[in-house]
Length: 363
Image (cartoon, rainbow, N blue to C red):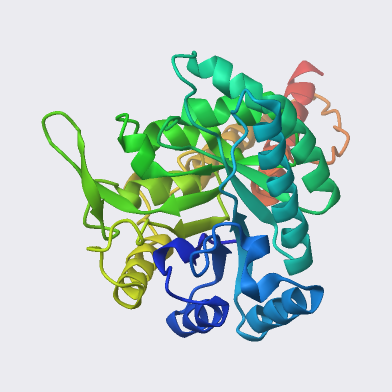
């Protein structure tokens, strides 16, 4: 299955649920991620999703538009030391999982947290693993998978791998934001092979970085910044990625970015062109270097036959002078797997003649 392209509601904060479904169908997107909708950061509290009949209506709206609700973006991380704060985030994530199940949505994306004071990064990440283990088990029972995604405080693929590997459950996989990775000079050539088949979503955005220090300069439209999506796409194909490029940038906080109506079709076309690109076949692999050399095999058989005929002539001469030729049993030619049976038959015939000649000469 090919890589698909969708967009997150973060790129169109002014759109409501109906606008998202309609525009996704109009522009040709396969799916969407629902996060902040009309300034509501916790989707279960959104006005359009308050009752079961509302969720059924939203689900039907997207089905009629042939657009998949791919993911719900949770804003709640579990790094807090205070039990009550962590429990609130835990409960909010549970609400997102329950909503995902109602909408038929396969993923809930969760951030891997923020740094806590001067605490070691690994200690902060490790504190999140027990509650994430419990959430992953619950999510799996509801047919939902959590996606651990890098954050500004934990931007490296190592941080994502730390969490995913620590949870080590089918209910937990990875999402990757390449712009945050570039902020710590980590390219796709490091992140994608490291996360491998556990990547289920790539957050497609772009940004500019200074050439001397690599400092972040600001978000840019996809294809106009420093992220090499051509190379990233090739790497994703290499790990048999069949998930989503999810267009995602903080439009609400970066108003100078193009509007969703302008940016989404352009970004979609740029990504689709690369996804559909078929690399030309390398010259060295156009022919099988190990294919059977039939002309050489035929020449070998001809030599064997000629040699057998010469031996037979000698045997006939000995027979006329009183010698006795001994008949050789008719052996069934043995054909090696993948060999040409015609060549095998010729070889067997030549061998039979040679044996007959030797027997006659010996007699």
